[in-house]
Amino acid sequence: MRKVDRTKKRIKILEGALLVFAEKGYHNTKMADVANKVGIGKATIYEYFRNKKELFFSLAELLEKRFLEHIENMVNSTDDAVTKLKCVINSLVEIGVKWEDALRVLFMFWTEHVRKGEVYPLESRLREFYCRLMKLIESIYREGVKSNKFKSTLPPEEFARSVVAAIDGLAFQWILSGKNFDLTDMGKKYLEFLMSSIVIEPVSEDG
Image (tube, rainbow, N blue to C red):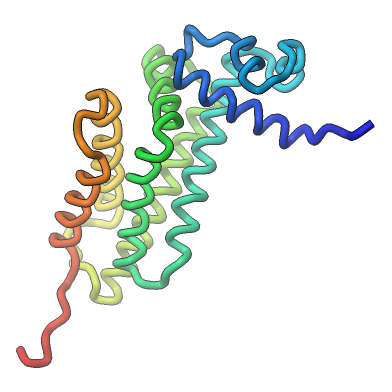
C-alpha cells in the first residue's frame, strides 16, 4: 500500500480551502465543503485540521509564506537597487492581481478576527511577514542611497512603511470597490511616481 505524503496532502487541502473560502466566505464555509472540493472524505480533513478556524489560519500562514518567497525570488534575480525596488512593487501588485483569491482570504482574516480582538499566533506571523518585507525594502533603499541611485528623502524605515502602506491600500481598495479600476495600471502609475521622486538621474557628460 502506497504511503500517503502528509505534507503534500495538507497543502492540497489548504489550496482547496483557498477556493472555497474565497467563494463562500469564512462563515458560510463548512469543513465538508473543503473536503468535497479536494475530493476526500470529511473525516480525513480532521486528521489534518481540528476545526475550521485552524484550517483558515493555517491557510493564511501558507499564503504569507508564499507571498514573501515570491517577492524575495524576484529581488534576488538582480543586483541593481533600482531594479530591486521595482521588482518588489511589481511583485506586490502582481500578488493582488494573480492571487486575488488569496488576497480576499487574508482580508477576511483581518475583518473576522483582528477586528474582534481575538488573539491567535498567526497575528505574530503576520507581523513577522510585514517586518521582513519592510526590512527588505529598507535594505534596498539604503543600498540605493549608498550607491547614489536614490535620493535620501526619508529615513529607510519610514520609506519602507510608506511603500507597503501604499500598495496595501491600493490592493484593498481594489477588492472593496469590486475591482472598478485597473490595479496593474495603478501600480505602474504609483511606481512611476515613486521613481520620479527618489531616483537620481545620471548626469549627462554633455551637461
